[in-house]
Image 1 (cartoon, helix red, strand yellow):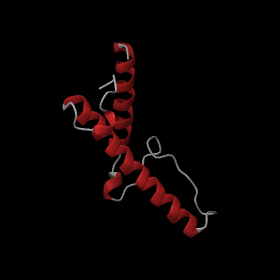
Image 2 (image 1 turned 180 degrees about the vertical axis):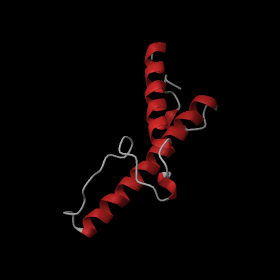
Image 3 (image 1 turned 120 degrees about the vertical axis):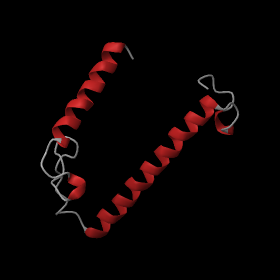
Image 4 (image 1 turned 90 degrees about the horizontal axis):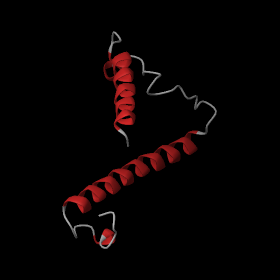
Length: 91
């Protein structure tokens, strides 16, 4: 990624953080969720059981993504630490 692209990404994150953090009550302390980061989604017409299943799947996908990222980091820093990535030219 070129340096200008990195600067755009960091600048966008900075602006989003500045806007969401400058509100009166923080969303982790009972304030409203920031709509820049968390766009409003209406789940009122979704069956409760279906919603629970989808939330569980999303949580598991997030966990798997974290494991995958840590595997890539481990493989690039400790050769041979992830057997599935041995011989991959990217690591």
